[in-house]
Image (cartoon, rainbow, N blue to C red; front, side, top):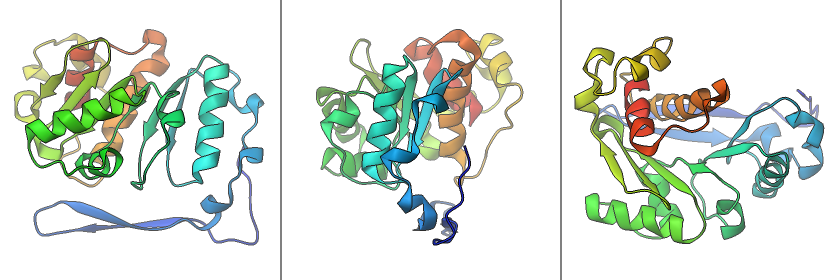
Amino acid sequence: YVRRDGSAATGTAIIIVDGNGENSIVLSPGANARIGPGDVEPAMFSGARLLLLQLEIPLETVLHAARLAKEKKLAVILNPAPARDLPDELLNVVDYIVPNETELSQLAGRKVKDKDSLEVAARSLLSRGAKNVVVTLGERGAFIASRTSRKYRCRRRLHRRHGSCPVAPKIAQRCRTIRLCLRCAGRHEVRRAAIASDHSRGKGFPPLRVGCLFVIVAA
């Protein structure tokens, strides 16, 4: 399902890393901006278990794809980047939304500056229809909140190596083919891929606590 648009350049993203190792991304969407709902067909989901989306294509196309995925009984994971405001309609068809702190601030309409504001912002997405919110925190690990379970805060320093994982060897076994990502650039993508990878093996989404540890071990 790769299509070529001869009237637009290929989309590009340039990663800029500051002196502290934190990154920002300069994006030129190119042909990605021309992907419309008509380009997403139900047949594309044949044999799939989940749909992993981000916001580098038009929002109307993202929403259309998410709706089709739910009609086909697929799980939907959303990486809300580049950050922008999202309609509640999209949040209601997403099983996991996985923002970083900057993206969460944009989505919640409030600055995330400490653990209290982090939880309030995450809970605001749950109140708007999101089922599970996974906030990636760089070197500080991850925060996960769900409508049906308690919140969990996993600290990266506790799970730097597979052998120190509290639920080893189960988590270590799932992560054994994933190299540790020690740079900020790409770490969030590894964590989102880890959630998708676990589900695609037919295991379903792991329990919230185990899933939180799995995300940390993977990245």
